[in-house]
Image 1 (spheres, rainbow, N blue to C red):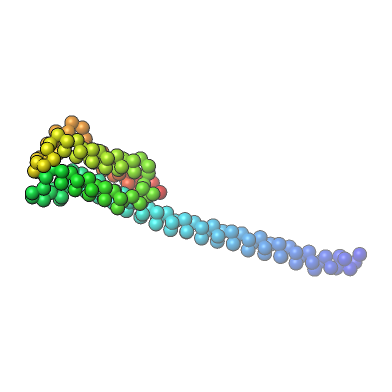
Image 2: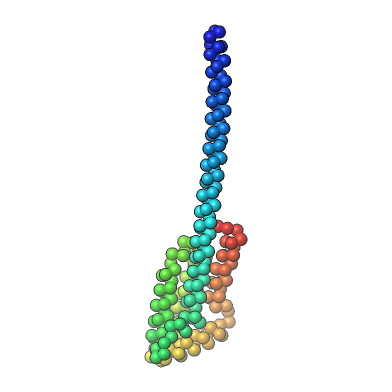
Length: 178
């Protein structure tokens, strides 16, 4: 019995030291792992925030570029017919849209659906106004009619509404983070 007590006298403190060392190292490793995970999360959020803000910038530029008041003067060439200008406008809007398709993964579905809706409304507006005119007429007639329509629109233009929605969401993102 005395030998067992003698052995326990040496083993018990060793077990206590080993156990306390294990707990201290375990606690340190867990806290270090959490710190690294937090740093990685912060870095990921910073990257995501930058990507999302770039998406809002690109969609803002897209909406501005497809608005009829900006698009028609950019595409109009002297001697064009209404059919030529209509085709150029629709082609340009669709090409711009395809170029910005990937931005949908960075923005809310509300913003993306608004942007898609604006694109469709701009195309439909051009088609509807073009139908009222002769396809072989000079393109300046379409330009004038579109500008009259835009100037006399009783409500806000779809592009203005979309820009406002994009702007509000970008501000919310900057205020609260991702």
